[in-house]
Image 1 (cartoon, rainbow, N blue to C red):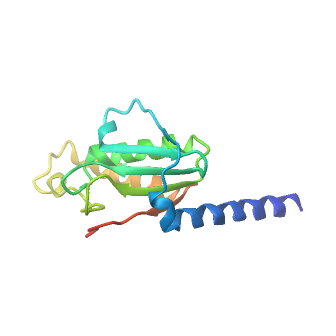
Image 2 (image 1 turned 60 degrees about the vertical axis):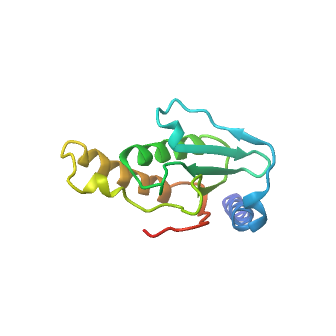
Image 3 (image 1 turned 180 degrees about the horizontal axis):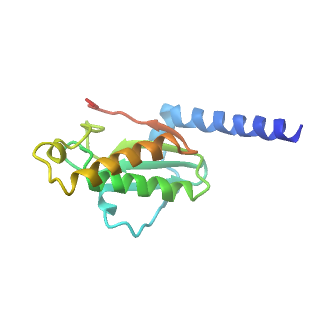
Length: 150
């Protein structure tokens, strides 16, 4: 019976977080935000904050002009997801610091005439990013405020 109560509590918590994430009001509400500090050398590629009052983290991609997924951006996003999961955050909003675009998808310069030593690391990092997002305990949504062609 305790397992059922725990499952019900987890389901209720997930529902509340999902509603907050999907609320248009949440996206622009500014409460006291907590900056996550990282030792990641690609910190400038992502900006992460956590609203401690709601338990919702925001991860902004910052790779102008179109947030194309390079090796470094994939690694930075994966690292940030791991750092956020180590907190009490329950949800994640993936968005863009670049106006009018979420992401153009894979960085074509990584694939067109690729550096054959870099390509396996790039592809592995992209796959790891997918697994980190898909396997995350965080309720995750993308805030798309512009183009997202891929």
